[in-house]
Each structure stands twice: as C-alpha cells, then as structure tokens.
Length: 388
Image: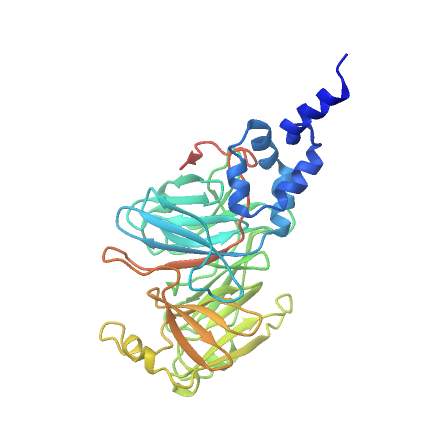
C-alpha cells in the first residue's frame, strides 16, 4: 500500500503532471507570449495542449497587437516582432526575431498570419511568426507583376482567405487556407481599373480595400467582401475630390478602422497632414472623419523632408501605424524612417528604436499583427507546411 507521504513526495517532484488540464491551461495563458512558445518544448503533453483549438482560441481572445518590422534584402528578410508599448521605450521589448529564408515584402496581416510576397520570384507565402510555420502559394497568379493581393478573415465563417486581383490579366481569384485548397476564380462583375496605388490591401470589417483609378477617371476604393466574395466600390473623402487634381493617396488599417492618407497636405502646407478614418463602415453613405496631424516646427526633420532623392514634402508616404491613448502616433515615412508624433507638442521625432536600414536593405516594412498560436498544419490541415 502506498502511503500518503510517498504520494505527496511524488506530487512535489512533478506537480504539473498531476494538475488538471484546465488549471494548467489557465496557468499557461497567463504567461508572456515568448514564455508560452518555450513551454512547447518542455514535453509532448504541453505541446499538444498549447496547439489545441481551445488554447489557440483562448489565447487569441486575450492577445494584443504587436509591431512587425522587416527589412528585406535581395536574398533574405530579417523580421522582428515587438511588444507595442503605451509609449516607445529606448529599448523596446522583443517578442521574437527570425530570418525568413526568402526575400519578401509584407502584403498584409490577419489574425496572427502574415502574407508575404517575393518581389523577384513567383512565390507568395503565408507565415505565422509565432509558430514559425509558413506555406508557399505558387503558380501563375503569383508572378512578380503589378498585381493586387490581400489577406483577411471572413466575418461569419471565420475563414482565412488570400485574394489575387488584376482585372486586366486574370480577374480575381481566392485561396482559402484549408486542407486541399487551390486558387479558384471569383464569379461576378469585377471593377475595372488600370492603376492601383498600392498592391497591399487594407483589411477592415471583413473586407479588403484597394485605392484604384481607371485612366483619367476619378479614383475610387475597390472593396471585396471575403464572406460573400463579391465587389463593391465607394468614394474616398469628398473633400479630396474637390481639388482640381486628385490622384494620390494610400489606404491603411488603423485600429479597427479603414484609414485614408491624403498625400497632399491640407491647404498645401507641409505641416498640416490629414488622415481620414471610416468609422461608420456599414452605412450606405460612407462618412469619413477628418484627423489632423499638425506639426509646428520640424527643423530636426529638415534633412529628411528635403532629401534630394525623396524630394520635398513631409506628406509623402506618411503611414500611420498605431495611435496611442493620449493621441500620439507611431508612423513610418516613405518606408525609410520611423517617426513619433506628439499631439501635445505638435512635433515629429525621428526614432531608430525598431531598427535602421542597412546598406543592402530595400526598404522598411511594418504592420501590426495580433500574435496567435494558429497552426497552418494542425488547425488548417494544410500540406507542404515548412517550419523555420
């Protein structure tokens, strides 16, 4: 007969072995993200628990956005994933970093997954930087042309979908991330355009968005519903359309809102940048809210905004990345420099907290990503998943 003392001794030596899975799950969910990733290597029962559907969904429901920064070169691409602090620190907290085995640029992010494109080869990649998995999407639809791509999650079915769009070449195709999937053509009317101002789609409210134009016609926003797999169109901010010439602008996702950045500053003044947010998305008549980024004195950026190659104008390619609770913003200028905007001081500061471009770097890519333990292999049953 085994004594109570011997039972207690065994439990002291291996306490976690005797814990109910519900309690162990609760403990692991309280750990920092990087520590949970380490726990996957402790033993197979822990690995199975962390990669279970229940743990993935529970963890993702509590996950907060992180900042992904990459600096692609011709042969590889270094990625860093940072915790998004309430205010940038001198030494930001790094969640993970890795060297992706192929040159690639970020084409979007959704629910923990990154969509990457090789600018030199006919490859698309869907990657989870937390589980260190990726899958290649090859074929004629991934050739290095002026095509449009996007990734998002459908609102009702919750399916991850990758979208290819080029009305002048092969229309629109969708690739659903699931077992046995392949590219399939979207039926129905596709909006006509011959110019897309950015191949990267902005994902908001279950839809992908591109800012496009057709010849000399007025530019518009092309919208693809991932659930219904159909297109609609609507106008950018009407204030922009009132100008004699309007052919500039970029779409981004800022928080939960669709964001339009006007490349022409307000009243043609370099120091009053305007960002438009679409908050009431479901309304038939889209209502854009105007947000001003006023800059009083930018002498520290004089070299930056008057560079002989980039030209004049702070407004050029000013990408908002994150808005803090006090109204301050983290921005990326022209895919070259990170800037921090102080709403109180109305000033911009050039920061190098998240890395600086090397001599062989093509640009800086940055996007927000909500970390998750979604496994392309275990949860979606996809084949040819590569670990790195």
